[in-house]
Length: 305
Image (tube, rainbow, N blue to C red):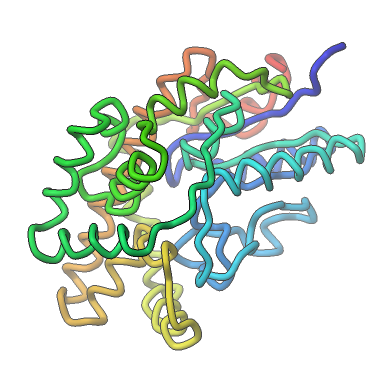
């Protein structure tokens, strides 16, 4: 029996994934499952470049505006929730289109990786946070690198959330993140994933990223972060998102507004570079030129599914 087809559209930030996926969904009677680790949060709209209702053009989106910023949300939860959404779309007779730039989320689906949803050991988490306060994040990065150098090749020395995650997995299970992934990749994958990634000239991508950040500031990103801090009393992971943590630091007086904007642009460009490196690992990915007309790229997708 043939496995149901699931289309995946991935790529770096600001490459046009949202617009392409919506046009494709209209063409093939599809619905979209978001694979974006920040768009999943309610009330975090500007800094995540979440599409507004009119942009969605009536296409149903799953796992967007899905949880409160006060909640933790893991890759294991995403895999479970995304699989349910894919099933629901298939049962309707429609085509699931997974869209996003969070590599871990996408890999959990296309490779069938089981990320054990480990219980957070609050005492151990506090111990790690104390190390960051007293010795700096670099100390934790080095510690994680000693435990799982393979996993750390894909993680930025500034990515506190994922550095802590590598250490917590090993602390809770006695196995490295890499060992767990290798074991679970042996599992049978339920769907026939067809993966497409958007790419463009690096300089043009960086121009688009810089412009996007300017637009976010104009739309009211600073006010959005201020409102979030007033509305919610804790953010286990949400405020570690790119763009949000820099605004928090600005509001606390650590940067001028100009410094904050430049920091967001720089970190966004670095993130895009890491995303491209990540998605190039999958040799079966079909690459599309993001600067081509949407109709051309849709035709490329239709010819390859």
